Image 1 (cartoon, rainbow, N blue to C red):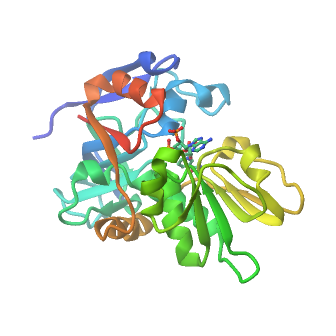
Image 2 (cartoon, rainbow, N blue to C red; image 1 turned 135 degrees about the vertical axis):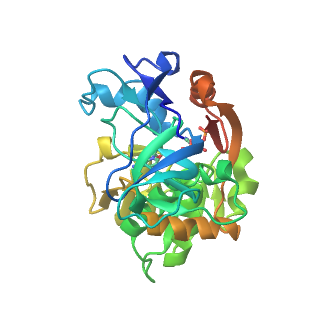
Amino acid sequence: MHQMTSRRAVVRVPSGPQSIETVDVPVAEPGPAEIRVKIAAAAINPVDLGVAGGVFHQLGLVHQPDYTGLGWDFAGTVDAAGPGVELQVGTRVAGFIDGFDRDHGSHAEHLLVSAANVAVVPDGMDLVEAATVPLNATAAAQLVDLLGEASSKARRLLVTGAAGAVGAHVAVLAQDRGWQVTGMARAADEPFVRGLGVDFATDLGQDWDAVADAGALQEHALRAVRDGGRFVGVQPASRLPEERGIAVEVVFAHPDGALLARLLARVTTGELPARVHAVAPLDEAAGAYQAMAKGGVRGRIVLVP
Ligand SMILES: NC(=O)c1ccc[n+]([C@@H]2O[C@H](COP(=O)([O-])OP(=O)(O)OC[C@H]3O[C@@H](n4cnc5c(N)ncnc54)[C@H](OP(=O)(O)O)[C@@H]3O)[C@@H](O)[C@H]2O)c1
C-alpha cells in the first residue's frame, strides 16, 4: 500500500527562502514510460534559489495558478513503474528534472519522471552523494560538448568557478577533449582545484583560447578570451552577445539517463567529485535554502524527506 498523500516544497508568491512552504498532494500513478521515485535525497542548487526568489517568475517563465514546485536533482528508489518501463520497483536511481513552469519538483517525497531521464545508482554509492551529481555533472558534460575538441592552435582553457559543482566537473571533463585546463577559484580552494589535475589561478587573466564560465562571471569572463577564441556560459537567460570573433555558446542542461550513468561511474572511480556540505530535513527546506543563499558553501546541501 502506498501512502495517499505526498509532501513537496513549493512557493506561492516567491520572495526568497522564507516564502517556501510544504504542501500535501495526492500520490499520482506513473503513466507510460514513467516511474514514480520515492525520493531519498535531493540537492539544493543555485537554480532553486532563483525559483524561490522569483527570478524566473519575473522573466515570465512561470504560469502556475497555485504554487510552483522546487527542486531539480534527486536520488531515490523506484516506487512504481508505468507501462513499458523495464526498471524494477526498488531499483536505486538518480536524475534531475528541468524546466521552471511546474507545480512539482524533487524537493518532495515522491516525483513522477520519465524513465529515460534517470540512471541506476552504482552499488555502494550513497544516495545523498548521488543526489549531488545529476544536474551539475550533466551540465558540465553538455558544456564540454559545446566547447568541443582542443587543437594544437587552441588548447589553453580557463574554467571559472572551478571549485563549484559545475566547474569542478568541467575541469575534469575538458581534459578528455585535449584542453590544457586552468581552474579559477578562491585562494582557499587551491588544493581542491589542483586535485582535479589542473593548474590554478585566482584571477581571470587574459588571452585564453577558451573560457568555460562555470562561475557565471559573464562579461568579465568573456573579456579574458582572446580574439577569435571560444566562450561557453551557464546563464541561458542572459546569453552574451558575440564580440571580437569569439564563438559564444551557453549551456542549458537537459536530462539524459545514459549520459548520467557514465558520469556516476566516473564518480565511483574518484575521477569526478561528489561533495556534500550538509544534510537537512525536507520540512526545514526554508532554513536550508537560507544557508545556501549565504554563499561560500562547498558541496551541496541535500534535503532528505
Ligand atoms: N545552464 C545550465 O544548464 C546550468 C546548470 C547548472 C548550473 N548552472 C549555473 O552555473 C553556475 C554555477 O553553478 P554551481 O552549482 O557550480 O554553483 P557553485 O557550486 O556555487 O559554484 C560557483 C563557484 O564559483 C565561485 N566564484 C564565484 N565568483 C567567483 C570569483 N569572482 N572568483 C572566484 N570564484 C568565484 C564560487 O565561490 P564562492 O562560493 O566563494 O562565491 C563557487 O565556488 C550557477 O550560475 C548556476 O545557476 C547552469
